[in-house]
Length: 114
Image (tube, rainbow, N blue to C red; front, side):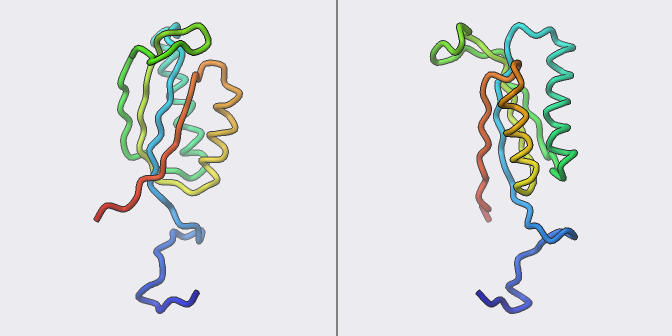
């Protein structure tokens, strides 16, 4: 594919195109507030340490599940909007799979809505 200079995609200094994503994750409900806040900070640190820029964090708080997950009926929901490349997403996926305090997570790429 050949682009004219006017059509070239905008890329940051490193040459990788950054895309906008929304992340929702659920933290176990039994965590104390301090431990939960430290975990949320740690999870966001995974993204920022790998080049992501966090734009918005929305803590939904404790919510009921639609169905029981690992003998739990509630979880603490957090929704985060960020800009990143694949590296930060891959590292986040890897580390949250082994973190016992994260019940579920899902990352969705947001399309440009101009």
